[in-house]
Image 1 (cartoon, rainbow, N blue to C red):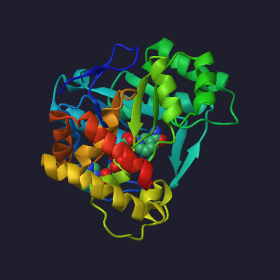
Image 2: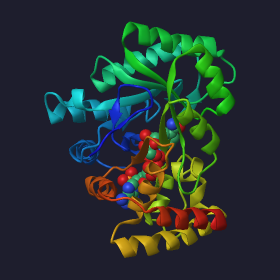
Image 3: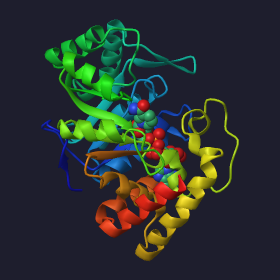
Length: 315
Ligand SMILES: NC(=O)c1ccc[n+]([C@@H]2O[C@H](COP(=O)([O-])OP(=O)(O)OC[C@H]3O[C@@H](n4cnc5c(N)ncnc54)[C@H](OP(=O)(O)O)[C@@H]3O)[C@@H](O)[C@H]2O)c1
């Protein structure tokens, strides 16, 4: 898989990043340990060299799967794979707890290194802004971790433009991770600005939490803490019916090209000029191998326009 430079960093990353929120197991469908470990191996075997995770993904469970899966792949794999993990957001007794306090960040980084079975983290991302704790404290902790060599780069996630500018005053922030997909363009301005500043830009929810794969055709009931209920708003009205209409437009292009809907969603995202890499989550080898086929082709300018016009009209 071709690689692109991630912002101004030295990291060369694949335009697809493998996300592991689902792999952690909380808030998503349950799968066996074997299935999840095999999914991580599949992502790496498909040529994806960037893995996104977080301590908040089931209290370090996703990180532990990654550590084991890379170990199982054998000697040298850690050197070939770049890992982004996060901090300042914990998962305690089934609830997400955000805090930018330095002691939490330092403790989480220590635990992430152990979970991931590594001596350094390529990119440590502040998972969510904390409106209470001063940025000097939060980013002071990240600066210290970078000086000590525990982390190579600092990033932020879910920061708006003002918050990103503030963070960049107190630390060398080199990456932005925000939600961006055919069904969510709320972060367009901050992404474009970050790209202009030469930050690495990575999108999450690139498949709209799975709805852009065409897998969901009826509205289902999910548990209160299921991400399809709590986090992504596409699985209920009014969004659900709109997304179904958008899938029809995507299907026309998919049929003409003989590709899957998920590939259309991935390429629409990764081909945007201000996106360096698009994160997708999946827990099964077959889904990862199928999604990775999007790297063999690109949407034409005309197809991009058709999709952009459909999004503007329908959503
Ligand atoms: N920074 C943040 O605050 C933040 C927030 C959300 C996500 N993220 C990161 O971004 C990653 C991606 O986002 P996401 O996982 O939330 O959403 P997503 O990638 O938009 O969608 C994931 C869903 O799509 C399903 N899926 C993937 N490929 C499929 C296929 N070919 N056919 C059918 N279903 C398919 C997955 O199913 P299975 O898993 O059941 O296989 C999963 O349910 C996360 O894993 C995480 O690393 C970061």
